[in-house]
Length: 254
Length: 278
Image (cartoon, rainbow over all chains, first blue to last red; front, side, top):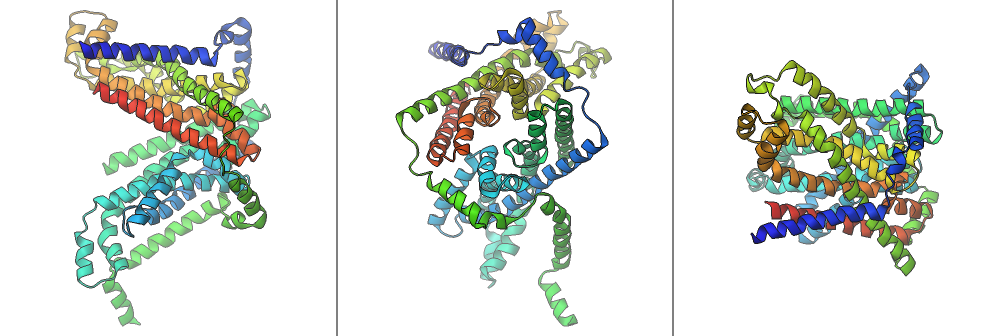
């Protein structure tokens, strides 16, 4: 009975929070529903059709999609390399002090969203796809570093220890004793993040970091809605394709 | 020479295939490096280093004057309100869509394993709509709505409402399909309407999972509404964008810190509520 009262209290709190949100934002959704607002929305939406499918624009879209793919692939690869290096520190293989510092670093890298990194990297590296690549690399390093470190901590240490006792060096013991155990897991984490990053790379361009996002931002700013519509369709196709592909691969591997 | 290579092979029998795979990957990635304009040296040219150095030096001390803090507080509340209002609107669309899309309320499945052709035919467009809604990233919706309804949080709320209704609708439908179908079947067979089957047959079993997923999505919505501001949809993101453009390092530092605290807070709220439910 007491518990039910508590739940009722929480429910009331939630309702108050929702009402407060609408009041605070002064959302005027009724403006969207007046005849004038409806006509404006309709005109705006109608301008997107038909999507621009001229060969010259399609060629540009193709380049943009390839650029997006390249940004995500290189960004994820860089992240996997740095993540692997940092995960060695974060798993406590180089002392406790390094471990604490490294975990803090990985947390900081991870908690700043990709888009914020991209805005910062545009300042550091100038407009263009390289800024996007760096942004993805920085955020993903934080994510992968932590996952890699967890995999390292959970892998059995017996093979590496056996090699060490047989007289091999630290590096060789790691490469032949530990790495084969964690590599499949590292690889699947990396592929999973790549899938995420393809989606992210498509929108990083909004802050000037190249790819399809930049094309969408530019065309919308120039009021070329029909061109923008084809960019959105290209993004949609890319997301669905990646989804289908990764689903297929997962079904085959799983 | 032969002895040397055989010794090399005996040390690592897989060395040759590994080297070949590495070379192949590098060859495949080469055009990618070109397309991504991968030029690390630009980071170190003196002009960029100078700009970045001055900008980063400005990070300390963080901006803490009263006017700025008041703005920051307002933007933080606006971000939270955007996420909450967006989720509420998303629920309004997601619940009916999930009821239409779920196979758990299918009458034709009572008699055979497969759903009837007509049912499939009606369910499919709803599923397709949900897929399109969630497959276009929320920030693209935000960019589109900013052009339609003007700068400010309204665009962000609508963007969250649309994307999240797609996600919630799909997952709700799946959760309803995953709970024990026996009560729902019994009610359907006894001739009750689908709506009452949902309320009395499915909801009692699914409620906990549904709420917990909704809370998790709210947490994601908070994160999303922070970023939304970059395209002009209000909240903290818009403040970061403005401060970045003005190279005001101290302000960026304060906003980033606020953002981290906000995400942490949202995490905690949703965790506590979910734990209560469990």
